[in-house]
Length: 181
Image 1 (cartoon, rainbow, N blue to C red):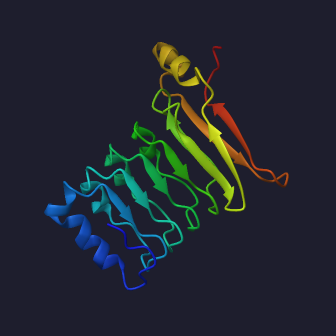
Image 2: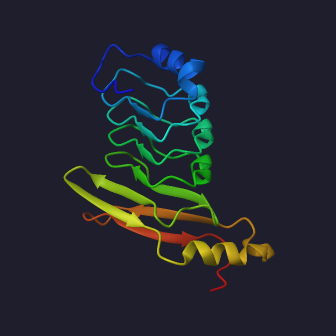
């Protein structure tokens, strides 16, 4: 369902789309770029087969935690929105391959240890000077391996996005907790 640029699409219309039972099992692509929506409804989680969600260049300022229920989601574009942080539930999205946070205020991307896909691409910066960050090979596997250690059981891998030193943006991977290796 491609509604890009349709300024007549409002929050109430999106709510109706999410609650429509006929769409919830069929909808795999939803493009809301440049529409008039200001909020994603909690019912977005009902779109169980959604693979691609574009909400860039809207007035959205946060994502509901129900975004974590979209287990088939492969692409999430929130570029050009007022989003400052992503809900932790986004780290249960094992199929996520592309996360576009360009032109947002997002500065940290949290994932529970072992839940991040090593094939995930994160797009940072602005459209003209973007950076791609990928999880270094083996990081995820080591985090899973060491989860049995009590100090690491609830470790969080996060990507801190630093732009305070001027361009270019830098993605730094950090593991909170005690580092074993």
